[in-house]
Image (cartoon, rainbow, N blue to C red):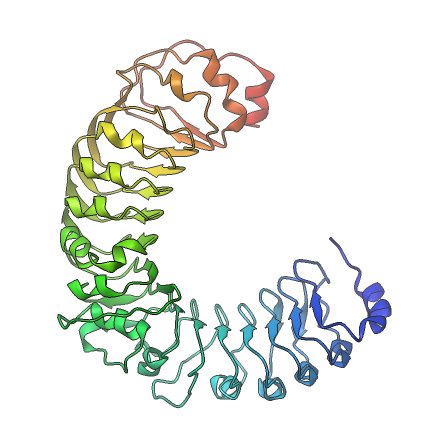
Length: 433
């Protein structure tokens, strides 16, 4: 949808009694957020995200005293200060991600005045620093996103982990540096998670709502301890691109407990873990997304992986897995994305039952496909990316495979012994043009 700014201003005066207004994902060509919005005093919900606004955000928005929800994300805008937020005492959700807050003085102090605030998202706001001392009291917050600000201070502020109602925390991509065992926090479910990275003391948390945490792309170190498995409602754990120098078997054991029944998303990519998988992996029957990309995990992929029947996304690439690829892998019938490239796997990969697979990367292994014959049973599937270079195919490509080619965006069959010419069809030409 495209709304012309001038036409919008002429008609908006008739909308003064609105309590819900969503203009997100339009294109206002870098014009400033119109000041007349501040006269819509009945508004409770205002979403201007990714609407193509620019320039300074008008302080007149502070006149919208009935607002519960304000989203200014993704506009090319900035603020001189945030004092106008004090006029929004009922605000529960504030998203200013990608708004430049670098020159706004005492930013968090002004936001701290919002006593009803539940969700605060300030990702990519060019915030230069974050207070280390507990000078702010976001006691009501359930969601906090401070990702991708690259603060000048590199320590995680202790007050963050005293937020007792916190259910979702994103501190990723900030270059925070610490050994987890050196951090000390008041008790909350989020702080219990961080504490469980470093303590042997029994820890449990049984809040009713799911908990999400992302500490990826920092410089954190430490170990995940056994008590982590007692955080019963931990739903997503993203710890990638840190320094968890630990064996994968230790990590899997640390997750055993009531967490087994709730964990759906686990990312431990590029974290310097090593060792062998153990059979505990097969107990995470509700996990949907699992990534151990770019580590030093070795040994076989165990037969117990067949028990991960809910799995949609699996990335085991760029490790040192070896041995025969498990034949019962085909029982993962819900799998859509599979990355096993750059390992030392051998044996036969069988595609039967993997009918939902649309991205498959398996290059730089010693795998063969269905006994070195091209996977005829696979050509009916909707494949987006198919990368099977250098895996020992010694066969001709059936014409039925090329009939599927209109689905492909990425195709790599190099360094095999495939023969027979590629048919000259308009479908193939249109696919790769």
